[in-house]
Image 1: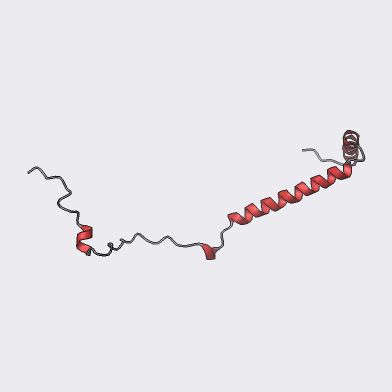
Image 2: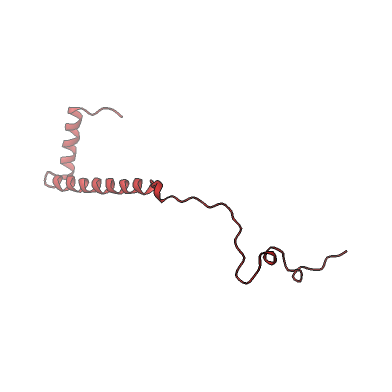
Length: 90
């Protein structure tokens, strides 16, 4: 992008004044300032929500067998019921 110096900026300013009028320029500048402030606050909020502090991270527990429900002993919970299996052909 070419560098904008004094004469180029003056021409751009004159074009903007002719398009919008001198009375509307302060309102235009105010609305652009508000928009920039809102945009900056929203992008800052997005960046902060992406960063997770180390204190809130939790480790995933290793795969551990779950205890059997109350009323069953450990051996009957691990072995399937013989009655629910179809008869094998021997």
